[in-house]
Length: 376
Image 1: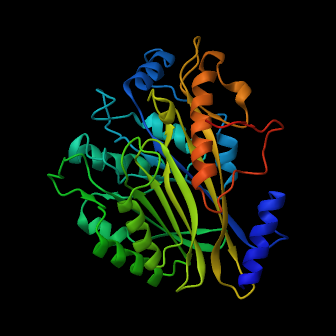
Image 2: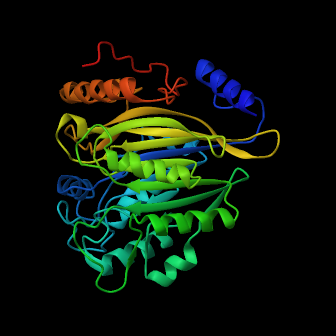
Image 3: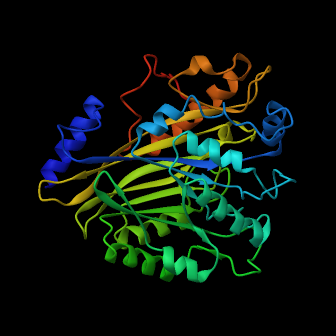
């Protein structure tokens, strides 16, 4: 089985292939923080000409990659407050049309356990869940109350015949406590161990834990993150996907010797879309994780790759904030290419130096993949 795993990963890395033959496989795709700052709200309102908020152009370039995955996940770092007074930082509230645009771009699951989930208190936190339900979007991390959490965890999806469980936890809520009983999944080792065990017992073959952790704007993970990752590996988790720092951090495949399997640890995927201004916050990464079934029928994480994208600001006319994949750099507005290069070189330096067995994507949907030489 080990030889089969190594051979599969080696062939995939060399050829860029996503599968070998017709063996069962599932592709999971993850991105980081979907932010909604005031400038994004203002632009979406302008483009809608006073009749709501228009996000229709924000994700069109990245959507083909998102929709090609079997299941795609993003961190919704804004409550859907219901209006009419939508706001950006520091206390976010976004219109439902923002979530609709993310759904239409191909995202299947929204993570809601993050430090901004209670920005508009319990009422908006609950409304967010109701809105996502009405839009047909899966969500985990926050719940109407403790009873609902108990009834909805474990959350397991059948994806291409694989039973995959998802869990989501946050370090905090910016000091805002729930006052009316809303349940937020906090980073608590005893609770996490219990819910991971429940998820396995409910039939999950693969367990994914999304963590909202780390220090903002720091490009390397810290000891707390590493220690928590080690704890989750010891609990038998297969994928650990991190967010919150608003910048990318390394991705590593580590070995769970006790269970004889590889585990993917992604410390931070950075921003998906935002109005942040410093070079390292102007973009983020996506990671694709591939699940396969061995000849003996056992599901396992096989391999992963990453790529990057840039969060472009409006470039005049009717343009909006837009996520632009790094493999189509010609789409980046000319006046923002210097900002993109600063982000891209910084991200590539971190990944080239610190990633372990998570290479850049080898197979592109576009004839002109990016090549950055001489990273800063």
